[in-house]
Image 1 (spheres, rainbow, N blue to C red):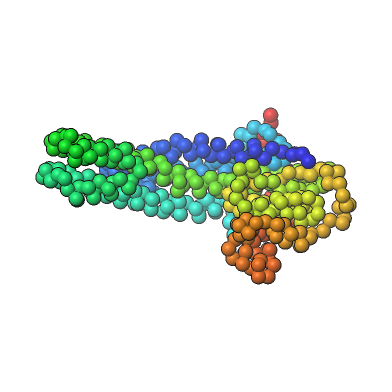
Image 2 (tube, rainbow, N blue to C red; image 1 turned 90 degrees about the vertical axis):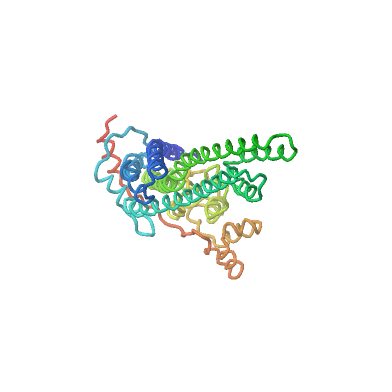
Length: 387
């Protein structure tokens, strides 16, 4: 077996997305922190403004417009520099529907945008509340030490509540040591009060610093992660389109082999596709006209490997037919824990009850693969980008 194309090249396109989003994320996080925590402006309005001012949605869309066609070319076996994408080809990338939900990439991005903003707003509201709670606790401690009410159960309770925040652990442990020394009569009351004041200052400064950092974390977790998930799925599909376009008519390629990336540790439908011997050709090997849809689900990073003529040395290809029993044979060979992971809770129950292995989550059958692109698209791209 040999690879026509290196699928890793396509996965490396994710770096371009991360580079594009990094400066936007930094500027947005600074803006949001300043507008909400310093200027006390409404969360919803600030988040909407941040996405608009720093053109977040346009940055994501531009990545797909510029880079997805590279994945198609990598799959096809071409590695050229592109400055111009022909409009007809770009239309296929952004507006051609290939998923069961009937959404094109442009519509998918448009639909995701308000959900992403809502998710960011929700996370910030939660952080504002946590920050406000910390501020209230430090104010409570400040009122107690002003009265000189030391030691105090209320004071100790406030410190315990602060200790639940991992980011404040160091400062909390420091004041706890001071309290222990005071109990041992090794420090004066005035010295302890000074330590409490320093503690309040450190907590409030640390809280502000933590919040500033968390703004970037929130944007990365709630917005960038969605862009990355869509990108992985679309890059995989684009690479697959190029691969099928190059290989379907290549007589030297007899079969396709489903391959998982090396760090795919989950046991799921991809494991089934890569290890079940459904046609007697070997684990994960399929006829060119009966291959599982790839990507198998959003965020799937599996890829295809070509199987050249002569690599499978047993029965002639005409005798190769689907073997339902091989699916059950593979599944029955799995430990019960792995079988539950592959089949899912409901699928596992149905499989045990009826033997219906097609109840597997994300299993979509087999198809005769068709590319969204034609060889004329590749020639058009090459013609528009002479090397």
